[in-house]
Image (cartoon, rainbow, N blue to C red; front, top):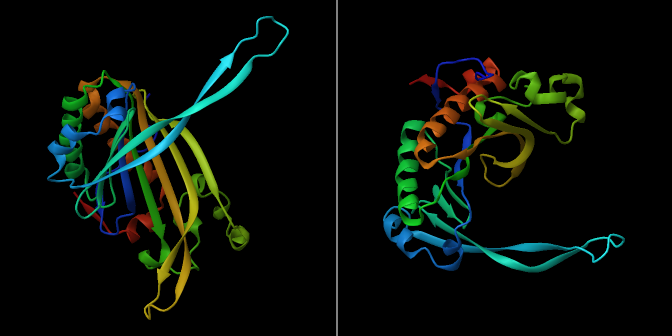
Amino acid sequence: MTIPFPEVDRVIYKNNPIVELICEFRFPRILSINEKAPVEFQEKIRSSYPIYKVAIGHQGQVTIEMPANSVDAPTTRLSQSEKIKNYQFYSADRNWRINLTSTSFSVSTQKYERWEEFLPKIDELLKVFEDTYKPAFYERIGLKYVDAFQKSKLNFDNTVNWGELIEPQAVGYFAEHKLTPFIKNYVSTVEIDIGDGALAQIQTFLAETNNVKKDKSVRQPETVFIIASDLFYFRKELEDTKTALEYLHSVAYRLLRSIITKKLHDAMRPEEI
């Protein structure tokens, strides 16, 4: 199956809508990651990611006890929860973050500019991870883009309807201007086959932010339209990761362009690459 979104020329937006980009790799559990502090891994990345934190989560273990006869129902028990460690490494400016658990490795940035700068960082960190922990394969590889559109930052006032900025399939009831004043909340989720064995889960919803006025004394909440696009493969060998990421990226910008209107595209001030 081919990519289900029209081919478009890549651009860089001066008003970049990406507030976070996450690249995640999931793998069969490696017990040593949860049992021992990642000393060797940290030493290899510490010059670029000097800030270290660890978060502890819990995961319950569910067991099902089968009855001795066929009359009684099985008994479900929740045993003592297992501690799951999430090791976090930050760049000095905190714009880049690495998360490491016994089943996943991810790199995220809140200052994404272009793919040609992002991918080499992923390659470098992935090599360090693979050399240190030697995963057998990846159960899931994904790119998650979080795009936020705030009217005031795009020089639009509230007379501009979201239906003028987002295509109907993603904006739902906002496409009907008469309903807009009455809509208090909106969430939409869809999963799409994007070809080459990959999938995309796309969620669109409204969020609220605080817009600081010029006098800096009054904070006025402003509605923001969010597009969260999670593009991923299941089961990939280590040597196939770069090709997989390149494909997911090639779909991602075509996906976004299929969702936004020309009016919004122009307002983000596109520049040719």
